[in-house]
Length: 282
Image (cartoon, rainbow, N blue to C red; front, side, top):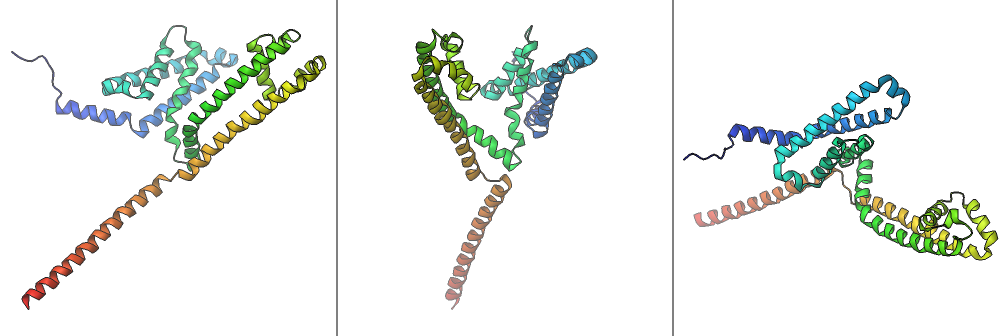
């Protein structure tokens, strides 16, 4: 009875390995990044009515050709990596974006394909400045989540207070919680600060206490806290970062230093053996 299970030949294994190396190579990923940037350019041109009128068919053809290449790339990765494909978060990220792009009436979601360039930023880390920024972004995310939580709490509490105090006379600014939060955001970034606050202060003279709280908590404390977190992460990245070439040279120097010490120890042992042999001859 012959087994129905097929075995991979060495030729198939070699081809599979070469294809996996190709998919992980820097050149291949740079080509993918180039296609993503080209796709971004096409999507930007499609926002112009004149460009669509004059070159609409060409832009459509380029966009969907690139989408087809992305589909081939993702399918190839799935075939080559098999179960390992879904064990990597970036692969799942690419799979979701490409799948959404293929859905009917997803033309407005084509911009999501631009987010594929985010994981590829690591290929631009050759520049020390870019490497520092990318590393700072990686370190800053957990801290910014904490600051964002504090902002949400502050916006919610101050927004509820604004609705309770001013919703009756100023419904456009504090009519409900969403409008109140939007007004707080405008006050935080000083968008028409005087236009918003002056009528309320004329109606409620003691409202300055509320607006002072907004300015101190949202504009001064939380925004500056967010900036401090980003600056600290960037400074930490600069202090802890080492150039890849320098790190490799340092590692090689350590290896050579270890080898030199080993050689010195061997010379010392050989010398001791020579002395012992000479003593025995005497």
